[in-house]
Structure formats: C-alpha cells, structure tokens
Length: 376
Ligand code: PLP
Image (cartoon, rainbow, N blue to C red; front, side):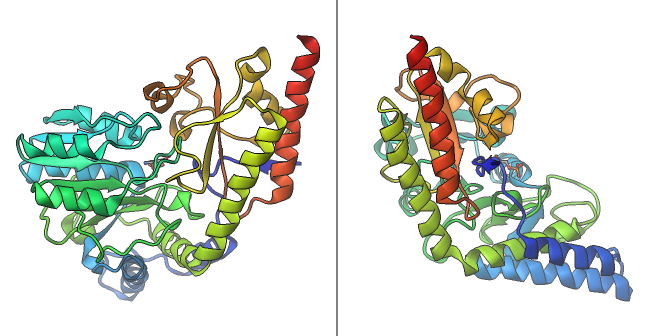
C-alpha cells in the first residue's frame, strides 16, 4: 500500500485541473501580450482566472497578482513594503516559513519577533505592546503554521494593525482553499497563496494587494500583471490555479469534515498504539485540520521512524516540507517548549486520504514500536 501523508508539502493535482490545463496547452498558445486574436484568447483565459480568484476572496480582480508561487508572493509583499511604503520595522515570529524569515533578514528594516505562548500561538498582548511604539511597521504573521498547524486570528490581528497604523501581511499558503476567505470581513494589506497546496499545479500562486496600498514591481520587465511583474504569464498554471480553487470551494465543507475526521481519528489511534505520543502545537485547539505534528518517545526506532515508514510506502515529513532533504531540523519545533530529544513527524492530510490509510499507517508505527520493545 502506498500512503501519501505529506499534503502540507504538496498535494496531488485534481483530475479536473489537469484537464483544463491540457486544454489550454493544446489550444491556447498565443502570447497574452500580443494584440492579435491568439494573444487576446490567451489574455481572456488569464483575466477569467483572475476574476474567479477575486470572486472567491470577495476582492477586486485588480487586487490579484499572479506569481510563481508562495515564496515569490511573500518576497514581494515584504520587499515592496520596505521599499515603497516607508516600512522601517517588521514584526514577525520565529515560526514563519523561510520565505518570510529569510526575506525579513534580507531587507533593510529592523526586525522584532513577537513572543509565543508555550504551545506556539502568537502572544497578542505582546504584539500590541510592540505596536504601541516604534517606526512605520509591517506585521507579517502566517495564518497557519505549515509544521504544527497553529492558526492565527486574522481578524483580531488586522484590527490591531489598523489601530496602530501598521501594514499587515499574512502568509495564507497553508489555508487558502482550506478555509473560505472573505476579505470584506477584515482589512488586510497582503495575503499569499500557492496552487500546489490545494490540488493545483506547482510554480503558480498569487499575491493579494489591498487597493489602498500602492507598491511598485519587484520583477522588472514587460508590462504584465498591470506593470507589477514582468515576464510572459504562466497561463497553464494560472488557469490550473483558478480551476483548483473552484474545485476546492465547491467541496469545501465536505472536505473539511472528512479531513478533520482523519486527523482526529489518527490522534486517537496513535494514542492507543503508542501511549507516550505527544502532539505538538495546539493540535486539539485552534489548529489547521490538515496538519498533525507528532512527537514519538525517544528510542532507537524513533530515529529511524520516517525512514522505516518510507520503506513501508508511507510518505510523511520530518520537518519543514520545503527544506526537507537539507536535514537541518525544524526551526519551528526548536522554538517551542518541548522535549527536543523526542523526534517529531508531521502527518498532513487531504481529501484523497482514507481511514484505511490511517489504519495502515498507525499499524506500521505500532509494529515498529512493538519490535523495539522486544529488543529492549
Ligand atoms: N509559505 C508556507 C507557509 C509554505 O508552507 C510554503 C511551502 O511549503 C511556502 C510559503 C512556499 O510556497 P511555494 O512552494 O509556492 O514557493
């Protein structure tokens, strides 16, 4: 049996998305910047996709800029804020994705890190204290943490940012199309998305820029994306992203309850199989339903657990998805008050996972620990 439990790293592309991408690859090959019929046909596909994205977020199509993915969108929000909006300070946390952490290090602004609660939530009182003084600020806080799943109260943070006149960027890469976003409900300056996290293609994402905010391009070149991002558009990616969003929104409630059910089920099955397991972050509280980060007891078997699961056909992740392979350990878990010796595995789920797959995976974990117990 092959089981894919690494959906926070990337997801399987929906068949309907592949179909629409293939149609465009076959039929729509004009350059969207060309003024002739073939070009206009390609342009129409892109603008239709933009309207689809905007309608789900309840924003204007002019506020959506397609990018090569979440990393570029995060870079654009941060770099442009510092360069174009007079931002002199960035408030963030040490739990952000590297697309944010490394970008705030690279720009010419002071960086302050908000304190965290013991289970990894942003300490909002400390955020407010930081906001009360200091220069023009960008607050960059992710909606859901990609490793532990903790969720941020976007509305509350946006209200704080407005009260203290700060800009607000949220990396919504892990939550886009997993929750609905009504950007009329709260005021935010930038959010980011990546299609491959919601059953769309890799290499395409978008940045939402609130129309109240005026920034200049990060990638210079042609006049694409209304002069905001030079370069011939990834038309197949763009139509694929919009289709993936449509498919996701059509089945959102059913998928939420199915996937949340799998997460809850795996937690209870793991507790039965290995009673010493611990769940990192706020797994049973305000947590993204697709992510479960598990610490196993410190034993020789645990060190090899991910490897052994891989041999049994189960794909999960040992740390941050996007840095896997570099084997540097998790910067997120290192920040949490937890027993550092206990190795952790992130299981992350999608609508395509089944209860049988969870049963199989937990059974393999159980067998490995039983084997270890016999050797002790
Ligand atoms: N932000 C978060 C929270 C992520 O999980 C990821 C990818 O893992 C990214 C940004 C980067 O997105 P992309 O792979 O589209 O560059």
